[in-house]
Length: 141
Image (cartoon, rainbow, N blue to C red; front, top):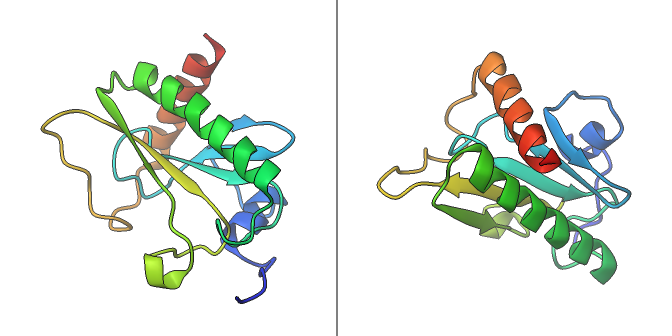
């Protein structure tokens, strides 16, 4: 397996070199909005530790990401009046992984509303700012 590249996009976000719409952070994970969401509230949950994917992450760090993903899912259900949640994780390019830092996609969904195709449309920054506020409020309640 290829070594972790500390110059990947999410590593730069973790170091504060690239801004993000952060909605949650603890000592082991970070959750922020996807700027090309497939649904309103599409959030990415990543470990703060370096890991390409599920194949090389420490079990404790994976457990922390999973706990945060559940917390984000519950908040997204509330913030976006969702009827369900899609949770996705891809490891290695052959699976469809684009950024080689482990991440879980948390996407709130409603019956009859299709997801946008992946990586096709960058969302307006004002919309993302509003979605972040909604998620942060839902996480606090």
